[in-house]
Image (cartoon, rainbow, N blue to C red; front, side, top):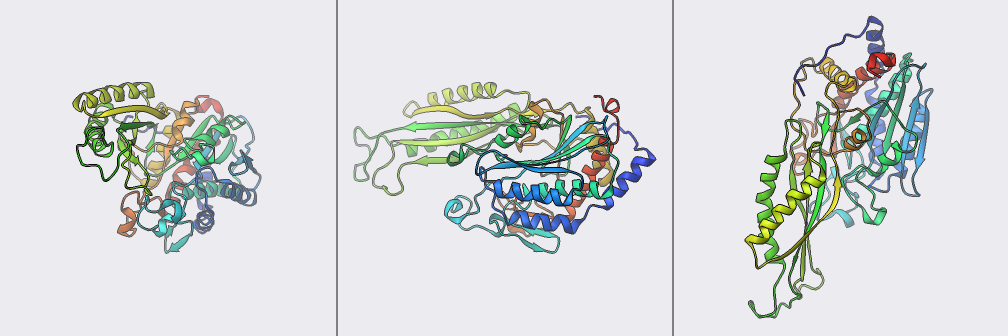
Length: 445
C-alpha cells in the first residue's frame, strides 16, 4: 500500500453529522456493555448466550434498527442489526467475531494456558479505572461492544443516512477446530452469516492494532507423525526391535524450527509477515508412563500471504519434509495437511480502505503511512474472499499502561483500555458517515 491517503473532504453538512454522531459515543455505555459481555462465556462453538445478549442490547439501544439473533444450532448463532437509510446508498457492515480463544475453565485450560488462569483468562469481568479485565475483554468482546456502541450513537444522533448499516457478530471466528462442537471455528459462523442474506457492499472488521489494513494472511495447518514402536521402560537402551518416537521427534522439531524461519523470509510481503509456529506435540498415555509411545505427533501453523495459495504452501512443506527425512534416514516420518484458510486482500485504492484511512488520520492527527507487516489471521480474510471489499482497523493491544504480566505470551486479549476503544470508534464513525451519506455512484458502485 502506498503511504499517501487519497484525501476527500467532508462537506460542511457531513462534518456536522460526524461531530454529532461522535459526540453521542458514550464511553460509560460502551464499558458497561463490555463488562456484561465478558461475564458471558462464549468459547468457540458455544456463543449462543453472548450473541443473544448483544442482539437484545441492540434492539434496546439502536433505535429504528431490526436486530435479531440468527440461530445456527442449539449452542451457537450470530447477532445482527440492520439500520436502513433513505435509499440510494451503499450497505456497510461493521463486523467482529464473538468467540474467545480459551474456555475459561481451569479443568480445560490449565496447564496449557499457564499454571493458573490469570484474571485476563476467566469469564469474570473486572474494571480498574480505564481498564477492563477478563477473558476476551480486548479480543473479541471490546470489538463487539465498540461496534454496537457506534450503531447506538449513530441512531441517537438521528443522522440521515442514505445507505444501510449492518452490525454483525458471528461465532466460530477463532483459528481453531473444536471437534467436540461440530468442528466449529475457522470462520464457520461468518460463512453462515454471509450465505444467509447478509450481503454488504463494504465491510469494516475491528481487530487489534491501531492501523488500517487492506490485506490479511491465511493459514495452513500440518500434522507430522514420527513413527516408532511401542516400548517398555524396563527395556535396555539400544535393544533390538525397539525404536522410540519421542526423541526422534525432537530432532524433527529442531529441523522444522530452522526451516520455518526460512519459510517466513521467503513468503513474507510488504503487508504480510508469514509467520509460523509449532503449536502442539502429542505422544503416548500420561497414565501409562511405563510404555513409550509408538507415535509422536507434531502440529504447526504456517501463515500465508494472500498471494500464496494453500496449495503452494503445501508444496513448500512437502519439499521441506523430504529434506528432513533425507537428513535423518533413521527416523520414520509422515505428514499431512489438516487445515487451510486462504488469505484475503482488498485493493488499497478501494473506497472503504481510503475512507478508513481518512478516519484514522482525523483521529490520530497524523498521516497514516504504511502499516507494519501483519501476521494475525482473522475473519477479514473470508470477507474479502467472498468478494466484499474490507478494511481492518483496531486498537492498541495490550494497552501501553497495563500491568507487565498481561503482556506475557498472548497478553492483551483479556485487558483493554476504554479510551482506546473510543478513539477507534471515532475513526470508524468517520468512515460510517463518509460512506453512508453519499450516493452509490460517489463510492464507485
